[in-house]
Length: 405
Image (tube, rainbow, N blue to C red; front, top):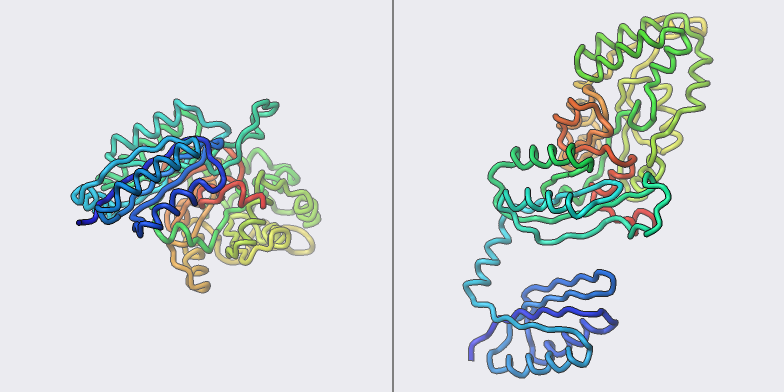
């Protein structure tokens, strides 16, 4: 008698040994597992097994599984699968695979509904959905302490990636959550180099603005900084103008600022996990090397590239040494470090907030605009605006149980 394909679906209260009991029955009849999936939500089990077995044995298998399921107090359904159905399923395995990550303080049913509707409109099929964050408490005192992340694995022929990205970006802005869309390939699981902007990314301030305040030219410098970050004026020009305004400032001020750098929320946790997992970490900054070196010592950063302020007789001259680390240079440095470390560009991550970060954000395998200006968010591949820097870990596929272990 020819082989049969049968899908069994089991649901009910989970208990130790349930899966072992079902597969033990299949094993006694030499069944071959063709596919299997299991999920457990609040001790409620959902188990599906597609198996192939000699047709003469199928009746006995179904009878034994039915009795065992009754004994265990779970529900079971059986469905025969035709060879044509199975072949169509196999063909779908060759279709594109993508990951959509929803991240925010909380995620509502309405938000999930709107994201899954976008997925449906693009003729993509949801394969799997899982929560990456821990279960939230019922009694919430401080919503800013919450975070919720759901990862959705989808599959299908994506005809218009730009249209999907645009829809998700618009939904993200409207709903106040972060929505990431990535291709689910081997590179996503093997990221090895991460490059950070420094000011307003790793730290909560623009150091040049802090220096300007001490020099009494804060408003003038901030006006130029904001214009540059919005991409309204050339970065090199803006940098030259801002540094010139610092002429005569005593270098002791740099020590004071460096000793009190306000570290971005989530930076310590992020760096700890990245170092533990063997990432190479670089700071590529349009700021100043002096402060980048302080962060190198704190976080164990592997590379620091920034700008050198010229000093004479213990005071800033209003000039800088060497070429400016602007947007183009950041992208060049990312590429160079990847080559030195023998890392593919698809394995790199870049994080920044300003217009001068866009070249490296768009070059990296995963470019993340972090609490960025609207123009930067609109032109970056991904963005995070709802949580701290450790939110990057969810885009890399980490779960709370791994992050906090």
